[in-house]
Length: 422
Image (cartoon, rainbow, N blue to C red):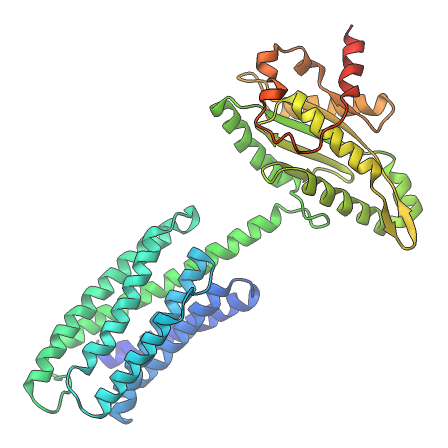
């Protein structure tokens, strides 16, 4: 296969990848990295189109402009992958400015027929490749580890071939004033074929990065309750398993709270489902505002919620939940000129070390919550099984790592349970 045929096939591949990446960028405009990668492939496509027409159009287009488009493609690649790795714009405009200056210098050297112009533009491409390799090598996100490692290998191989062609170009400059690549020299053709093969593999990596990001976004969205924005049951199950494993590993307590809004049907009947939805959203916003960032709020049913309070024992957790109950009891939600009020009943339990399962914990939290319902609603009840545990297992409230500046209130529900036990 000759070089022009390889260029033509590569150009077709580039056109297809431009379409694919553009479609992916339009599908989710928040993924800015995909857009940059589409720009990179577009610049590479134009470069290839110019190189395919070598001999039919002026050399200034097939060589000078093509080499500059190569730099643009690598810069767009760096920006796209940077978005996936770091999600931040460039902190300084110094390096883009230096790149533009080097491109202008290269253009002047080429037009004025000054030797070693190719080395100047190749240096810019090599620096961009090196910066990309360094960035990818430092990334830690698990979803990007494999594509990043493969991309690093491809870019290192590309840099090796580029350096090889820089050495070949030095020999061309020494041959005479024409400075054209000798047609009979197979080293140029084979090295370019190898670069084209590596570039095809890079295109696959671009799609891999974009697909990994989109899959992650879909997975995250699938774990979010569409109405309130908190976690849904599916995401809660996954996170609860992780927190239970961490609790077993570290020996720190994990408190689980089941919450049900009282008489919520009357809210829907009085204010309509839109009023009920507004109430649910207001309750979730209040819970998230009063809890710590590490605490988890999940909607498990219509008006039912579950809280995970890591590194918190059940007694301390009951104090926190009592504060939440008081806040919801005092909440007044204005809706269409009227005020919506609601209350909550909550059941608090805690994971029991080395003898518990998530199903058992949820069942105990539900039983405690229904105990709060039977006790007259608008109260907090702690699981009796947890209260019977030795204090060293439950945890001492004063030594809890929980931030005691968070909501705290009376523990009348605890006293209620203890009276029943007595």
